[in-house]
Image (cartoon, rainbow, N blue to C red; front, side, top):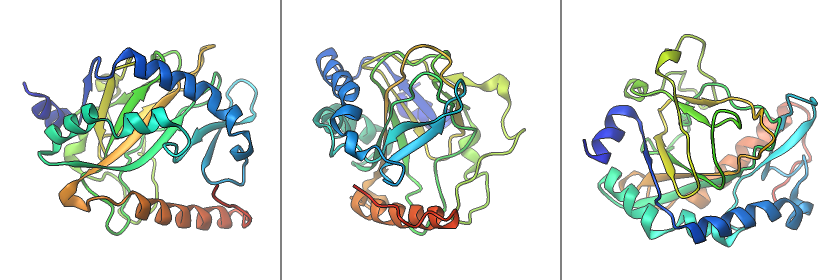
Length: 251
């Protein structure tokens, strides 16, 4: 079975050892220092940041920089690397374009994400949208690795196509088919925007720093990263305003 055939049939693939050790070591060091280096950015009003509850303490904990490649050269080098772009070109059958980039730090205690699909029915949102996971340290069940469900992507969008983010209801997938994406630095996992996935809390004493890089095919909008972030930030501001937070900003 070719890589593309596996991806088309299952909705995801894992490729071992795509990136050299030196690059991953630089990325891990960069990620470790990033929250301190950019401490001024870590603010609940800054929509570059994401937050999650800590299942041990109940505290609201900083978890994500989105976007991130403007903050770290190693993250940018990975996102635009010929190795990765060539691999995605094989899956698409045409060039790939970076659409979105975020670094999820997932420190100990932080909860995961419930079952969902990444594709959102915004006008013009690329249906070729896919995400690449690039771990900076071991990702396993204890520290809350991503869990994917093969085959369900063939049903397309499994929630209302109303432009809102939706979690998938219980019973959408058979848990017996769950595939934990167990990864080591240098590995990558790739899953499509319609592939259901989730993650459990990080119940270990280890971090699970991992790049989530999303792309689209050239024929499906070409280079639209800047446009996406303008639209995404406008959407976030509306969502925050619905909860009375009108003083948010992006830095």
